[in-house]
Amino acid sequence: MEQVKVFSIEVNNLVKVFYDKKLKREVRAVDDISLGINSGEIFGFLGPNGAGKTTTLRCLAGLYSPSTGQAKVLGLNVAKIGDRIRKHIGFLTENHGNYENLTVYENLKFFSGFYDIRDVDARIHQVLEECGLGDRKDMRVGKLSKGLKQRVALARVLLHNPKILFLDEPTAGLDPQAAADVRTLITHLRSEDRTIFINSHNLEEVQKICDRVGIIDAGKIVQIGTTAQLDKDLFGAEELTIIVKDPISDTLIVELQQLKFVKNIQANHSRLTLRLQDLDANIPNVITYLTKGGTQILEVKKSSHSLEEIYLTLMAESRNNGTRGA
Amino acid sequence: MVEMDAAEICADAGELQDAFNFSNVRKIFTKDWKEMRYNRQLFLSVLLFPLFIAVGIPLLMWGMLLGDGTPPTEFYAFFSVAINGMMKSQFMLIPVLICGMISGDSLAGEKERKTAESLVVLPVTSKEIFVGKALAALVPALFFTGIGFAIMSLVSNLLVLESIQAGLPLLIIGERNFWVIPFVLSPLFALVMVQVGVMISARLSTAKSAQQVSMIFMIPIMVLMFMSIANPEIISDIGFLLVLSVILLSIAILFANFGGKAINKERFIATLG
Image (cartoon, rainbow over all chains, first blue to last red; front, side, top):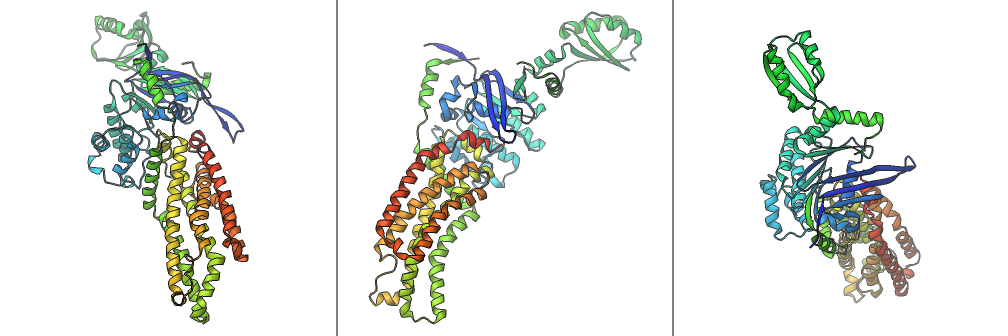
């Protein structure tokens, strides 16, 4: 049998154009984006409001047909498969989307009916336990807290054990504790053959749980990669923070600046911040140089930029220079 | 990258072809019925309106006759005229109004309650959603109309029991042409209305606005009501009623063909923002 290698989720030159009645012209909500997500990966899709995140997600779920380009899930062209592609995916909408007048169990029973689940009741009980809702199955969803409603929504999308999970703003509007609980739950959903695609504004959350991130602005992909890759690509040299015992002298700063691998140096009393080329290889060289000169080192810390810093820098660049290619 | 068997993917794709699945329709219908029972405002409106027509109007007429000092022997004649002139058309109004209320709430209500997207992301086709939503409005409408018809027949006949015991035919159920209205014409009017209601509900963002717009389609029934008041013979003519039924059936079939297409998921989702 012929074996083909495919991404779990793949987008090729996807364009989605809408007609804006107010502006009386066509608007490119998604503008020629391409990305590939591997099986078992948690991918974070970041961008400001109106950047095209939800439109991309809806194209991937077969709710929107691409104007041009392709959206593929599990190797299948979503536009060709139509509504039935959704038997294989779990889609958590931005609003929890549960029927508030029905009980937790009634909600799950309704949604489970659309999938091929062998023992529905057993599966419902299993996902209720997984989502920490075992003792709340007979409660009306409307009576639950926001965090619990979101757990019900997660339980709903897990019912058919989908290989692909699309989560649109999974922690939006939740208090910090509820958001942390939902995050923990998402982390537990990671498995070898389950791919999770998260749309989010929450940079800290994405940094904590995602393997890779994609940043989108004005319908175009600004950058894709791991946080570390993006940090390196964007800021070039990596940073090293060294705290020494005595105040740093101007002479020492001048000497350090003369080292070839030091790109930049900042000193603040006893704290040195160095940007080095090939950080890992040059840390021992810096330490040796300092100790040979009699400097007593108290702490050495490799510092990287947070996803928030990366995101904000990329967005600023994107706005100033036009978006970068993916 | 993940290695997947190409043949398996193709087989999977074949299995996933779009086909009308009545089981999905049934699930949407059952869920909507459960939800409606919990929606007190809607449920009471749906329940009280036919009850008011079925019980309230005959009692009101009876009270007026008593107040006027009309002798009870003349009640039968009055009821007979009133039923011919007005009551028959009420039985077209009841299911259409109920359909308008429920179908207006169907998809626009899902948008208001922010459940619309979780419904359309299910592996269901637009046609299945359309039929499920239409049945969820049609079945209660016909059920309550039937109940209303039975109650009204009972109440009206009880109020003129003396005349019936004296040998006059039963009111309402004693007239052959009357049966055409609740069991042929009303369901067809309701069928047209429910489809119009669901289509409108898919386009608008609030249940109230969808219900209001749907009510415009009650104008033909109002015209028929006025015609029957002015000339009760029209609505008693079985031939006329059957011709009207055929016209309505044709419109209903036409809408049924376009209904699924009218719920364009893309346009529907776009209205959610």
